[in-house]
Length: 84
Image 1 (spheres, rainbow, N blue to C red):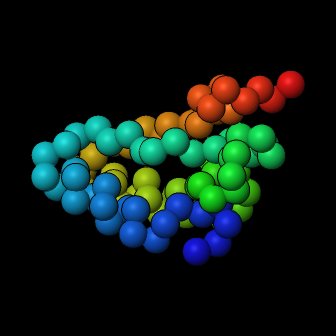
Image 2 (cartoon, one colour; image 1 turned 30 degrees about the horizontal axis):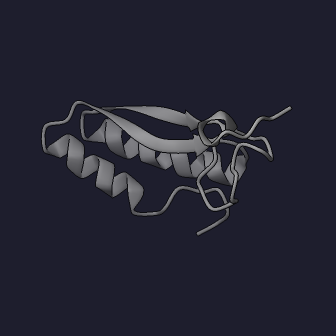
Image 3 (cartoon, helix red, strand yellow; image 1 turned 180 degrees about the vertical axis):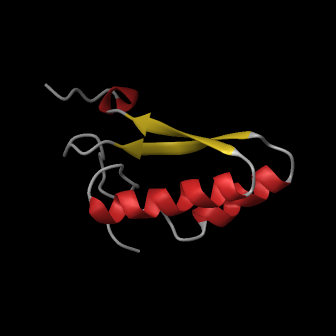
């Protein structure tokens, strides 16, 4: 897995949810393209060519199954950290 890219099985997981009757899925939190938004550098991000390509694949897989997907952004405020 490349740094920041969503896990390769995530699209299949979300597709199975859609096929099971869910019409709108919401992702786990993804950091924005800022150093402080991914607090431990282990999560997926929504910035950069590689990560964006990974998310694009996931959106295509969900849409191909007839579903919709909302990307949930993570922010430092969730953990009590400030970007200032």
